[in-house]
Length: 367
Ligand code: ADP
Image 1 (cartoon, protein in one colour):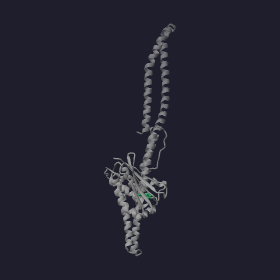
Image 2 (tube, helix red, strand yellow):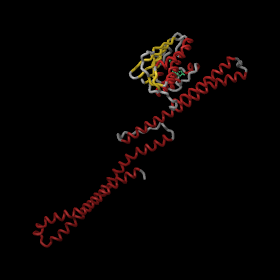
Image 3 (cartoon, rainbow, N blue to C red):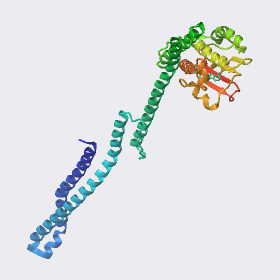
Image 4 (cartoon, rainbow, N blue to C red):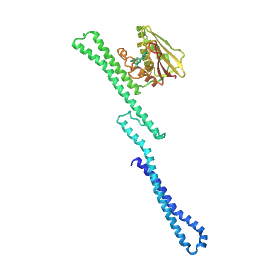
C-alpha cells in the first residue's frame, strides 16, 4: 500500500473512532441526563397536567432522540467530509516531496548527477532534501574528477608514445639517422613514460592509503641534511645557490624519515627546475606552535595567485608545454600533499606573483 493511502486511512480511522465514541456516549449518556432533568421538572408537570404526564414525557423523549440522531448524522457526514479533505491534503503535502526524492534518486542512480530538488518546508523533509542534494553534488564532483583523471592519464601516456612511434617511423623510412643521438631521444621518451607510470602507481597507492608509514621520533636535520647533500651537485651544476637554516635546538618531530625526505626532494627539485641560473634556493626549518615548519623559498619564476590552489591537483601544470619538455607530469605536488597530510601535517604554496619567486612550506607534528 502506498504511503499516501496509509496516511489517509490512518487519519480516517481517527475520525471514525471519534465519531463512534461520540455516538455511543450520546446514546447512553444523553437519555439518562434528559430523564433526570424531566424528573426534576416532574413535580410541576404533575400538578399542571395530571394523567397526561406519561404521554407527554414519552413524546418529548422521542422527539429529543430523533433530533439528536439527525443532528449527529448531519454533523457526522460533514465532519467525515471535512476530515477527509484535510487528511488528503496533509497526506499529499507529506508524500509529494518523498515521491520527488524517490524520482530524483532513480535519476541519480541512472547517472544524472546534475539533478537537484528544491524544497523549503523548514522541517525534517527539507533537511533530508538538502542532504540528498549535497550527496548528489559530491557524486557529480567525483564523476567529473574520474572523467578528468581518465582523460589526463590517456593524454599523458599518448604524448611520449606518439614521439617514440614518430622516431621509429623516421628511422625505418631513413628520414632520421640511426645515430646515438636519435637513440638517446627515444630513450628519453621511454624514460618519461616509465617515470609517468611510476608516478601514477605511487599516486594511486598514496591515495588509496596503501603506503605504510613508519612514523618515528626524528630530528629535522636527520631528514633534511642527507637530501641537501644529495642535491647540492645539481644546484652547483645549474649555478643556483642552495642555502639552509636548520637550528640545532629544534625539538624532534613524529614523521616517516624516507617519505618526508621524498617530499623535500620533490620541493627542492621543483625549486631547482623553476629557478634560473644565478638564483637562490633556501631551506628553512623553524618551530611553530606544536609543529615544525619546513619552508623552501626560491627566487624563481613564481606563481600567479590563481595557480597557488590548483598546483596540488593531479596533472596540474602552470605552463604545460614548458613542463612537458622538462619531463614534469604535474603529479609530484599531489603526492607530496598526500604524504604530508598522511603524517598529520599541512602543505602550502605562496608567491608574490610571476617572476617574484615561490615558497612551499609543510608542517609536521612535534614528537
Ligand atoms: P611537475 O612534475 O610538473 O613539476 P608538480 O606537481 O611537482 O609537477 O608541480 C606542478 C606545477 O606547479 C608545475 O608544473 C609548475 O608549473 C608549478 N610549480 C611547482 N613548483 C614550482 C616552483 N618552485 N616555482 C614555480 N612553479 C612551480
